[in-house]
Length: 85
Image (cartoon, rainbow, N blue to C red; front, side, top):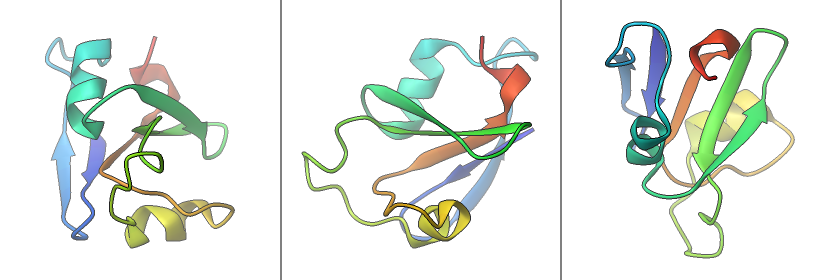
């Protein structure tokens, strides 16, 4: 199970359509564009919009607090490392 964290603070639990791992199209849909993978720890990734800062997407305070080393913008997906191949 993964968490889709929107810029308004809303968290929605989501699953890959195939039941095991997210496709590139699914990941792009969650973040609204090209993806960048940010490693959170050994078991979790945060998928962010690669160009979010360039396009001036709103700050995602919830996601930024999870990372603590950068300001995260736009909607993100937090998932287990084995949910992305």
